[in-house]
Length: 242
Image (cartoon, rainbow, N blue to C red; front, top):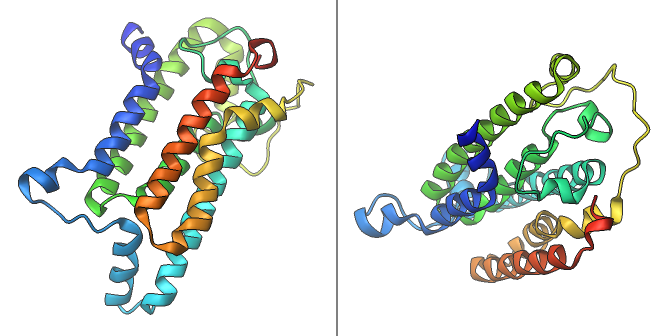
């Protein structure tokens, strides 16, 4: 459990390291493995070479698909944060004071991690193809390690009530129907939106700037969005974030 707690405390640093490595793709620079063509350009080329779509249509299809994935990530992050509380979302330690079974948590146990994966999948479009592959393998494995650690922690804390929740709600693939009754908790939408500027920004950037085919511009916009999110989270009053 100590190892799981340490990974949880360092989760943002680990995720950032994986994502930065995907963008950097050092194996291209040092060993000449792969190319620096971003996935958003490589995929349409491959689709057109396979004769599945003309290049123009393939490019539009990839951008639209990436935008939809980014939108899903933003929705899941905001929806999950609204019900869980932004202060719990960004806390450095696992929290087990109360079991949340409202909002998205009635349909999937880990909407926030699912939202992270969707956001990263959208960001992977801007990485070299090999970097995108590295990221899309490493991030799910890391998220799964976090999930397993949290499940063990909450099972110890909450006992049978949590184990019953585990049996009722899928881990990562949302169910369409649920037998769980809402507990009456209230969401905090404004705080959630303010605390999830990064996934919202990723969606806006992918959906609007991908059509410029300017990766440098999109990367700068994403860095600005991430910096803004850190500032907003630091200024968000803790009493409003719980």
